[in-house]
Image 1 (cartoon, rainbow, N blue to C red):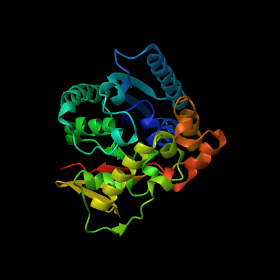
Image 2 (cartoon, helix red, strand yellow):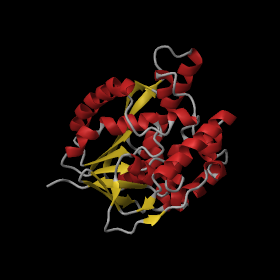
Image 3 (cartoon, rainbow, N blue to C red):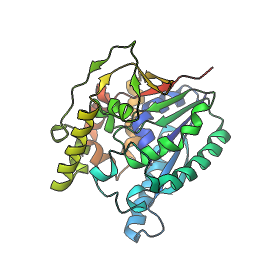
Image 4 (tube, one colour):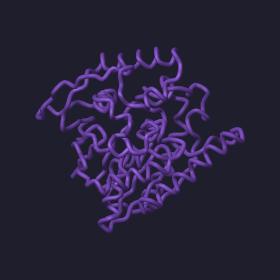
Length: 297
């Protein structure tokens, strides 16, 4: 089997699917990751350029840890692409494609159609866009032409955003999806953003204004489309079935080793305790989950 993972940034695919990658490689399969938004752009300062060079080096080490091949496309990361993306509330909560981003999305589509055909994958993994990060949403839009490929396509839930209970369901409902009438549609209790036990929330939101606006947008999403638990989503007749990977501890340890290579990222995501990282990955909210698109006959 040949697995191909598309990653918005240099760590997203490993965070969302790292244990599955470790399991696939251990079983003798092949895997590759294409990371899209990997550059600060030509106008970046020397300090900013150095940070991204470190992140690229870290990603190469993480891929080596997992035994996965990789490619960096060099699209400009959101905060350097547009001035309006600069904190939690401006980078997240995007579920519609801004007119200003259509050109970038078209360029991304063109490259991904060519690269995914060249790799000839047996199974494709794409980001769902939990939380609505603008770059994740652009990749969701750019990948729509790939939906008609005659191979399994799984939309993985990005960690740590999916740790916030209900945010993945919110993403589906914001995209216009309907829960299957045949499945159990239990309501999902919201975790208040300010009461979140997850370090990434408190490390990413750094100002009083950002806290206020982020809470407003987060609460509004839950009010507009109260999330429900379901095993199946439907978007315009396209069916997406729940996928969960049951990985062994050895594969979680492989994922942990890979995450620890991202020296500039993992402390903000999981807190500074290296030993606590494996414990966090064992918890149910950290189980690798996603949704597989049914192949149309």
